[in-house]
Amino acid sequence: DLLRTRGQYDEAERLYRAGLATCQQILDRQGIAVFQMRLGNLALRRGRPQDALPLLDAARAGFTAIGLLNWLPGVEALQACARGETFTLDDLLGPVWAARHGDRAAGERAAAICTDILTMPDWEALARILQRMLAGEEPAAALAAAPELSEADRTYLLTALLAE
Image 1: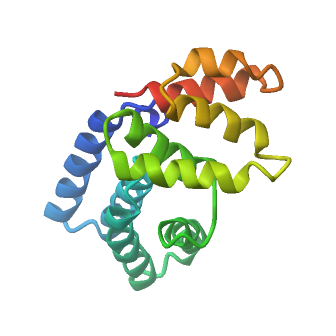
Image 2 (image 1 turned 135 degrees about the vertical axis):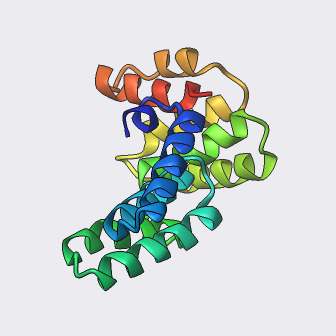
């Protein structure tokens, strides 16, 4: 989880998949569902909701089957994000990150979202910053042009967007 938070997505995915394989091998149903949920969350962070949804559906079914209903709200929130029913910062950062790594379709999605949220006071500054990044400006320079962001928000954005 720490690697995912730091934006080290490839290594996080490798470890999540290894954990999932181990849980499948030892028939740890809770562990299987947990790793499916984490892989789904990672896919969302990478801007790949189509990859996230099957993992999240499997995690929800797994938690339900073993009676761990306290996990369902978190999984259902991630499923809603994967289906485009809710909007979070990670929903926007995933496509921006993917666009910065050459995914043109993700860039078009991110640009459309930024245009939509420019009219929302809580999201306007972020939309302007991300539009600048989508236009090719380096994240640090785009963030420097937004003094209204807290240092914690700047650090989070840089971590998420500069991850390789």
